[in-house]
Image (cartoon, rainbow, N blue to C red; front, side, top):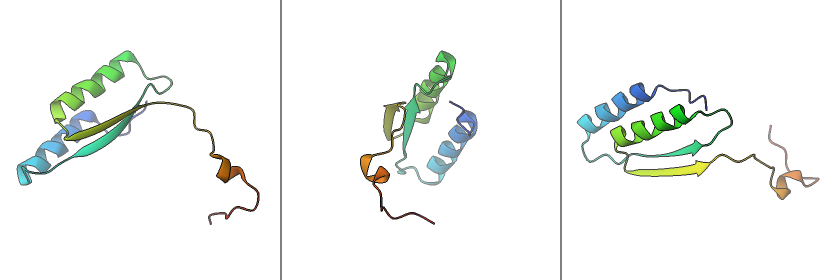
Amino acid sequence: MKRPASGEANLERVRAWRSLCPDLAIRSTFIVGFPGETEREFEQLLEFLEAAELDRVGCFAYSRWRAPRPTRCPGRCRTR
């Protein structure tokens, strides 16, 4: 999936934060099943999640994004 950060570096951050604030709650959300993601990459994510012991985790299967109907309507406000 080309996750930009190193799992080990993230794990070190989580440990450092928890050493500073043991009651810290950490949550994150992950997308899995991205085209090209290997079984090994998925296993590495599971290993990270087990080691990091995050407090809340959301996980969603990859799906192709389609623009919602309102974003395709004529006359909508454009961002700069």
